[in-house]
Structure formats: C-alpha cells, structure tokens
Length: 436
Ligand SMILES: *Cc1c(COP(=O)(O)O)cnc(C)c1O
Image 1 (spheres, protein in one colour):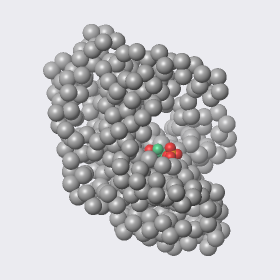
Image 2 (cartoon, helix red, strand yellow; image 1 turned 90 degrees about the vertical axis):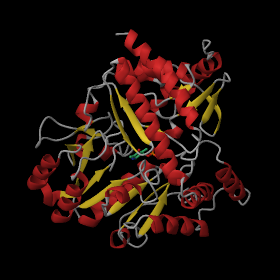
Image 3 (spheres, protein in one colour; image 1 turned 120 degrees about the horizontal axis):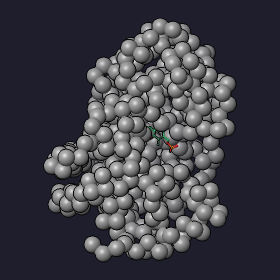
C-alpha cells in the first residue's frame, strides 16, 4: 500500500486548533495518546468513512457506539428527513416522544417510565440526582475505570485506601463533591461488601457499566452484578445500570437482559439516538415520579425529546426489532474478528488479552487477564499506538486509545471483509513486534 496522503486533514487540524481547544470538540478525537494527526471526516457509508484527502477507512469506531447499522443508514436518513420537513424543534410535546418512550419500555422490562435528554452525560447526572432525591442520601458509589459522562460527581478517581476520600480526576471538580463519591474496583465483590458494611446506609446509589466499555471491554465477573443488586436492595440504595453503550447493542434488552438483572434505574444513549444527540434515563415508576413536574427533583431541557433525534431513535429501534437476525450477524462477525486476531497474536508471540462481548471487543497489549482498571492499565500503550497507526495507514480506523471498544456494525456484511482486515492486522502486529 502506498503512503497515505493526509495533507488536507493536517491543514484542517491546524485551522481547527486556532478556534477550538486542541482542535476538537471531544478530547479523544485529537489522537494524542496514539501520536497521530486526526483525520477530518467528510462522509460515511456502511462501515466505511472517508477523510478530507479522499482516504477510505473501514470503521470500527461507529461514532463511539451509536451507529449499529453503519453510516448513512437509509432508513434513518429517510425518517429524519421526513421529520426535518415539519420543523426542527417546538419546545412542546410531540406524539413521537411517547412512541419512542413506549418502544424502549416495551423492550426493557425494568423500565416503567423514562425521560429523554440530549446526552449520556446529562442522563447519568440526572439519574444520580434522582437517586439522591429519592433516597435522601448524598453518597454515591462508582467503579474505577467506568465512565458515566463528565458530570462533576463522576469525574473522580480512587483515593489511597478503602476508607479514604476519592480525589477529583479533573481540575475544576470540587473536593467537597468528590468526598461524596466512593470508588471501588470493578468486579471486586468482597470490596463492595466491605464498603456497604462501612457506609451502606449513607449510599444513595451504585452506578455501573454492566459490561465496562470505557476502560476497554471488561465483562462483569460471575456474581458481580448480582452482588450489586443484592447489596443495594439490602441497604435501601438504588442500582443504576449505565447502558449507554450496551443498551440495544447486546440485544433489545441490553446487558441487563443478557445477565438477567433488574436495576432500579437505567441510563441509555448512543444507539437509541440513531446517530443524533439523544439519551434517556428511566426505571421504576415510583422513583421516576419524583422528577419535576410531578416531584421535586428538578430536570429540564430546551432540546430534550428533539423531533429529529426522536425520529432517528424510533427508526433505529424499529429496525432492530424487525431485523431479527441482526444481532446474531454482528455477534458472529465480532467473534470471527476476535478469534482471528487472537490467533495472529499467538502465532507472532505477542502477549495480548482480547476481551469481547457480542459485537464489542478490545485488544489489550498485556498478558492479562484484564478484569478491572488496574489490570487494563498494565497494557503497553506504546504498542497499541504502533498497532493503531499501522492499521490507520492501511485503511482501518480503530479507536485512538487503548482503553476503548471496537464496535462491529451491521455495515460489516461480508465475512471476506473481516479476512481482509485480519490480513492488515497481521502486518500491523508485525510492526509492533519489530519495534521491540
Ligand atoms: C458515552 C458514555 C456516556 C456519556 O454519554 P455522552 O453522550 O458522551 O455524554 C455515559 N456512559 C457510558 C457508559 C458511555 O459509554
């Protein structure tokens, strides 16, 4: 393959940096951790994206999860187009919002009522406020390495011991707020039990990614989600399942259906917006009725339930319900990808761990096993950067960070294509090996 030309992307990045901090509107897009220049994208179709220099890439990012059908899905474009002709926002209720709410509620048994918002961040932030308002407690518990958006209470990292305070993971987050967020290692049931023994009656909620996607993919250990359910029930805390990634990716019932758990509140985003800005939180009716205007937990949004986003969401969920074979197909393609990659790494003697659930996976450059943030952090990010750059140069667009998931979309229709990508991956892994 000839050397890729990226002149236009580089120029656009230079321009962008003059007007936008770091040239991007979300930090990971800047490609800093992989030492590359971001590609400026002009269009997408199926599982392909095209940059400003005309390079074509096979896309494993899928806009970080939402695009389960791939780019420019015709049904979503049609339905959003039809909604667009009627106006872009009314600031008043529309029938379509009820339609979408009912569709989601019909799919996910633990959700009895829900509210639509604009981003996963907003949905998680409000779910936590609701849990605090409902329980009358201030403390919350999150797991190290799980991401729930960038609300203040959630941008914290572990302190130095079990009973110590968490510390803000961003400047600008008050220590006073971090003091209210308890952190625990993912998948560590006895640690969780110990925290509940110490502070159980003060905890408003536990929020968790039922399959972690934001430290790379880390599946829940057997009994982990069940332990959260048991402990929260026992101590009167709420169980918030953050299914912003896993909702409608691991099936119509999400991770909670897959693992057979029933949380009090669920947060959804990404896929339910069909590629437009939309997210939701919902759950038990008796809890949701504490939201304004019924109750005294405040939440609002100028563009909440936006008609274009709602049209995209309905379109996406309708297709997922109709196309029965879709999950089987993307999961099968996903397993072929993971098996192929695993075989290549083994043949070449490169120590890796590949975690996957359904159509989401992460190749960690560490012997593993990877079961939590500490073990994920053992990955050799230099090696990932080499691998990433070699893949990108050869036309495969992976997440520009070791600690993210690769997503298979329905845009991957041909298994031959996975074989082609595996051939590219073989060369990229050779580059990793040579660099040692
Ligand atoms: C992406 C994500 C969020 C935040 O959603 P935004 O729409 O980016 O604000 C929250 N939780 C999880 C699990 C996510 O993956």
